Length: 335
Ligand SMILES: C=CC1=C(C)c2cc3[nH]c(cc4nc(cc5[nH]c(cc1n2)c(C)c5CCC(=O)O)C(CCC(=O)O)=C4C)c(C)c3C=C
Ligand SMILES: [Fe+2]
Ligand SMILES: [Fe+2]
View 1 (cartoon, rainbow, N blue to C red):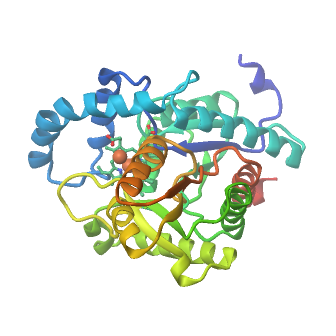
View 2 (view 1 turned 180 degrees about the vertical axis):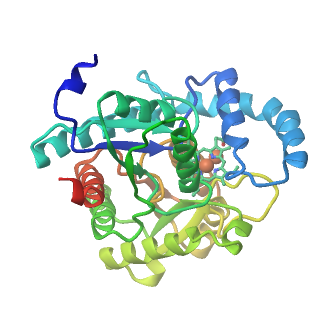
């Protein structure tokens, strides 16, 4: 019998969820990851009769090699930045919860695509005797393309369980004052170290416009986050801009596009920018390669002089405190 079973079960357990990343920066591992990710109809909702041939024909035969090179540029000795940061977040949230609640709270990691899977995270919690679960998707702004797939996967996994745990699902935290304060303090400490640029760009991951027209509240939530952050920093209208990055495919995505905006700013007299990615809880390919490296090239080649990337909240203290707070609010009835 599992030794945990004979002891008092934990008051609850926590599943931290992020998008996922390939196991290695090889073209074959990137291909496996992209295949799973881009086959989710929540991510690409085109008719499968049209989408599957495009995915299996063109995309999975060309994109993996190209994207593998980008992953190689950001991969560290410890692995994919997203995975390294996620593991640190898991450890730190677990120790802060233990400190705050005076008891051990199991905290596991589950990725929507790739490893460790959401199902394996839930299974680990089950093995520790957990009967109540807080699911915390690490996306501040809700999108049907990121948060909804987490809900889908959890419900699908529970189909195979005889006794499902009581489950709280944290849908979003885009206007949580602790989140806004954590973003503001990361910008301020960046300014203290490097000085303040002409403009602060808040670059959010994009989604197709159609998803928003069909009811995804993502764009409105990004706008709310950006406005609250600008207010917290005391910025005037001309000192900040919201933009959307990482377009994929032929459809129209949310605008303004980050890369186009970066190219247009120097001729409007903006010579220095600070740029941050508030929709990402952890640095990853989309922030470290596309924004920190690629964005800089776009801006400087267009005549910009100074380009400074502000890292995501990652495992910094205010962020871990925020995550622990979101968990304890959801678990309030259980402790
Ligand atoms: C195809 C459509 C895509 C939608 C819609 C989308 C939304 C979306 N994604 C994130 C966060 C991340 N995306 C990451 C990688 C990534 N995203 C897409 C496509 C869509 N994303 C692709 C194809 C990829 C893989 C890389 C590539 O081929 O370009 C990652 C990083 C993963 C890593 O390993 O570092 C994150 C995180 C959000 C927040 C979002 C909508 C709000
Ligand atoms: Fe993405
Ligand atoms: Fe991308």
